[in-house]
Image (cartoon, rainbow, N blue to C red; front, side):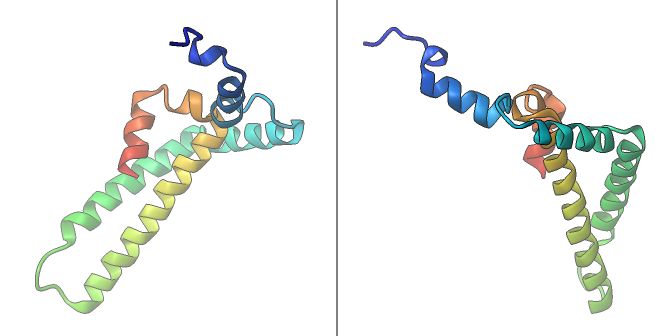
Length: 115
């Protein structure tokens, strides 16, 4: 049995850096990552996401059997919009923090599972 630690293997180090840490990327990507982080980690974006969560909860609560087709279409459209917003938030946070740092936070793991 090989006693070499998985993290000591060159291929595993490469995969970890390339897929999780993003430490070997270009300077242009680091500027893009910083720009995304400035946007997505802003307090007003957090407030916007919180308001979207409340509105999405309201939309889900309004869904009931026997509702009109117009109401059903409105609620379905709203759910698609909220799903898009929440997916974009998760993707932008992963870009801003890199996957290794993003998934160290339990709330981010929960958020990614929910999305």
